[in-house]
Image (cartoon, rainbow, N blue to C red; front, side, top):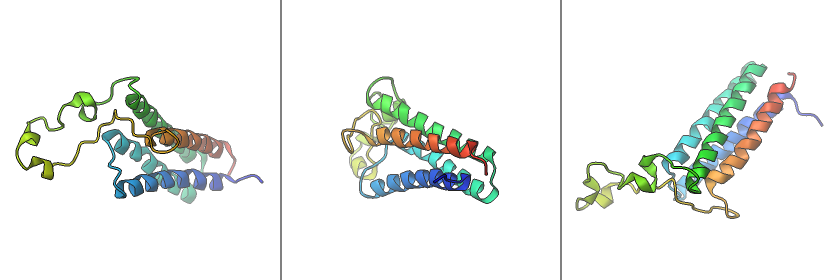
Length: 157
């Protein structure tokens, strides 16, 4: 059975929808995201919008835009994985080198701990499933979405 371009776009956009929904679900369940986790959500949101437009309008151009969105998601996930594994430095705002998280020292004031959200560090490995972190899984699934979008972009409508 050969899938049509529209079916492939639906699968690819649906994959980003599932990843984004999963991120929000785990956040709701208490897994606070770090700054890089939040960055990784944006390309998936773009892929969902691109998929909706591609389903409404059609054409290969939008599918290639989906490839780009999924590739950006994979790139950010790879970057986050490297930060977690200490392969390279991450943003100072969310790594162990970033200090207290409040540049003015207000986190040291009495009662500040109750009012200030906990800073989730991007460079801390928090295994999620099968020894991989959420960033690692996002990389794996995003690479799969890149492939799916490429097949959709090269398939005739």
